[in-house]
Image 1 (cartoon, rainbow, N blue to C red):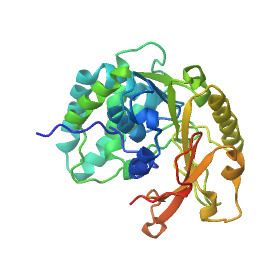
Image 2: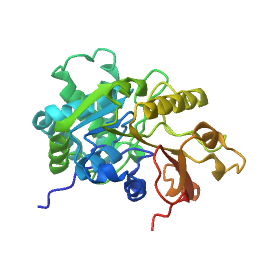
Image 3: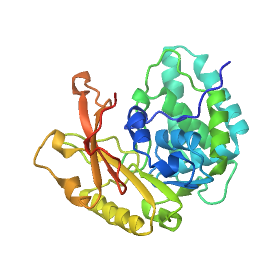
Image 4: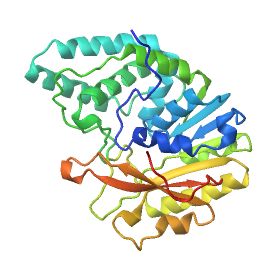
Length: 315
């Protein structure tokens, strides 16, 4: 059996897998040559970029951050308790797959209710054995819910409906083990992107993947946190980006391109006017209406030159 390369163990709306070829080509030469020992990702989410960069480049240490408590918990469990996690996942998968269609829907709702009912009481500080079951429930729900989304309501409850997959891969044991090995050089932090500041230095390469700014009045990305990310937060992030630049860190940031719908909207061009801005073609695939899934551009900001400016092809 072929051992899989490390990649996200969660499906994630808005993930960067499709952009990886372009992002890799925009990585600084010092990083490619293994001369930058520290990697920081202040919005790790599903981790497509983290898993790819950490497996491809020779980082001595990595620091990943997220405000989502469930993400923090899941990464910690995959890193430190992967054997126990796989055992609990196998139990969940066995119970689910042994049922018929109606039974699977009922079991999905039972697990979702249990996940939500324990949300307030679960320990969040020092590791607790209950984290393993919690992480297993999260992975189970992610693999069996509609469209592989992670979405919470205003009360912080997971509220994605059942997905009706015929044979979902709930326990990907080889992948979980590979991800666990890769995470051994990584510190997992719970908190706002600003908490990453102490790890920014001339020895750091950082990639920022904040919640994307909607490209139209009707566009909304699926919320994975109770808190939104407004234009004011985008502006705070731009100030933070500049502060990290002043510390000598090498920086890359991606976001939606408002010019897709309004050629005059220069929001990010103004925010990051002192840095290099490149537009990269992408294909959004989180719209439930297939007609809404098409090729658009995204902006990538770097504080170092990448050669040709303007637009970058994925060819």
